[in-house]
Image (tube, rainbow, N blue to C red):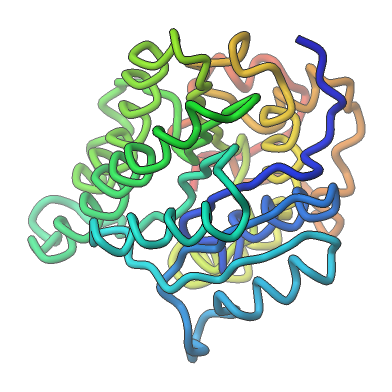
Length: 292
């Protein structure tokens, strides 16, 4: 199946997406002329976080796409169903589902209260399952259907669990959706893949939770994830499923050799992201220091 490398006319349903990596993916698709639903909780400006579903929609349309902002808590089954229904009514279907919404708290077992445990698992693992499940009947009708989940490779090393068992369980739950659904829906030609960054990405989570400006200065822009996502989403779905992609390696395979523009302010090594298997670093000459 030959594809033209463009998402023009395609409809993306993105959970979260009012800021950060999700918005970057939306804007990259919008530059092709895609339709994008931003299904997220942020309708009013947050005192510490940029962006709402409405500012995201305005940026998408300014970039050349069509946007549908929908207030949606992906923990609520009825809200997800309504958001997908509105997407189909507005754009005629769903071609791509991007599971971007995620919650994080890097605390050990005794410091993790059950309310936060439930939040992470409800948004990350359950939310990914629910959003994917709700989109699948429409993806079955699409010409080149993809589900892309922003979650890490399933590297079952104790080092990824010991400092934050609850968060790791929640993120790996997202990846298990990729693993299982890729095989379950292979006959339907729906691609299920995960994408994860090699290095830290300069997002609100990094600035507010994972080291602030110091780590942000050692991070790449969300654009690298957006470009890698675009490369994956324009591949033939029947030939590209069940993969746990790393952003830089996807782009290297696509012929990119200069990654400096993704970290224009970096003065030295970049911060490696967590959950990245050791073998991934062996495939690149990017200078990194220990996982954040």
